[in-house]
Image 1 (cartoon, rainbow, N blue to C red):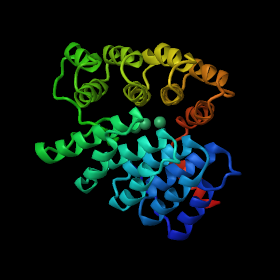
Image 2 (cartoon, helix red, strand yellow):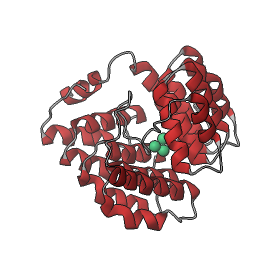
Image 3 (cartoon, protein in one colour):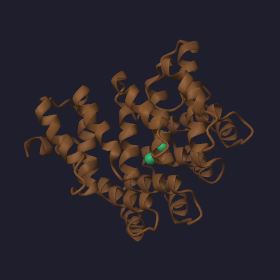
Image 4 (cartoon, rainbow, N blue to C red):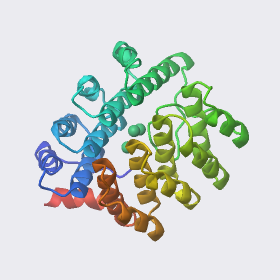
Length: 301
Ligand SMILES: [Fe+2]
Ligand SMILES: [Fe+2]
Ligand SMILES: [Fe+2]
């Protein structure tokens, strides 16, 4: 990754864009990604200020980014969000996941507490985070690097057989952590066959599980996933967290047939879906133009 250096004053200026409700959402997202890449205490504080916003989409992305930055300075902020019942479930879920991504076992008691939360997305996320932190400790293994450089909620399974991985991933009686491990192993395999197997997962299991499938299909940016992602976005009865992730995945695939579907949902009744389509269409524009142009543009204004 290219690294861009910025002074605290410049970071504060980017934070102003992130926290300005009059700015278009896509510009605020770009500011968030810039802060993520710059890192450090000031960036974390600017991101934390955004949790008072009204957009659950933007706030959940803030929580996600704080986990990906891998800086323990974010831990206390993330605990507050996980505990805050006035925050939407998708935001609290992402805060729980970020705590798992940071991998610090001091947060175990709080994760234990929320692993029995009545909101299933939050409970399952905390369960996975506990399992991940224990795995890091017990296996003494480093999580192998994945082609997407993301810090994932579970390490990939060592199994390489697509059929076996698919069976485990789709088996609703199997432990959720093991199903996630199979899911990430399939993603890392990355072939069309793996994409088609993963696509089946979009229609089984809990909303959390389905949204993770959509998320990895977005990372893979493979055309073979389009029909399933489209079906998921089009289903009015599907959970909005899943539809949101399917929309963003279509945006990262970025072909014109994906964009046409996204345009249809720009006025969706669910705000998180509507905003996802807006941001997804912007992503698909900028995928071709190179990420750091945004960092540079923001720093030069
Ligand atoms: Fe999520
Ligand atoms: Fe996530
Ligand atoms: Fe998301």
